[in-house]
Length: 292
Image (tube, rainbow, N blue to C red):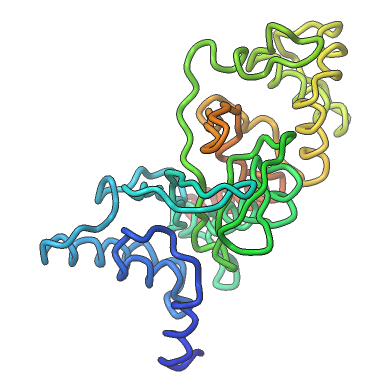
């Protein structure tokens, strides 16, 4: 347990998510003494307190977008950072873990499902290999990874309480093909082709068969696409499950310096191991509701 002075020094040393984000919210995000299952509640309390006092929270909306185990906040002001030696700024998103419906069935020594997903997405090695941005020697310095396809991760809480990402735009019709052009693929590839290619190889690696819309001949051709080559490597190296790569979990990120648009995966915390955790808690839920 940190003393008050140690805690204050620790908080002051952490990178700011946004200079405009209310300090009380920053403190909750980085506070180790607040357990993850209570963090969203404390953030909500800090937001309500700031609004009541007539102070700017620094967020686009006081109410986050909620998934099954994580809430997403959007800071109003962009985060300042350096990319490839250029001073720039980028709008961002905060994913905060909270107790979802299935977390009622976790054991006391188990993490929240959202925590575990945040740990996956905040993994330094994964982001250094496959993220569109690689962190430099300083927390606010980054380098472009031309072969990257994961949304830019800026900072992650050590225990998975939250992750801080670059904000992306939802996929629109035509985006996928427009931004996946490569030698031999002058018209780009479709989302269905990417999905079928990765699920074909995932299924084959597990002794199964994937039935998709893409022909076997096209699947073989897609093996020459550079983005798919790196995505397949990521899938095998990290346990990422390609069945989760629907359009809702992907988007378009615009490089703040070059203005180049990149197709990125924005929600990739549902690995095989996390899927097993979800499955185990669903099983406990079923047993509890049946009185087992």
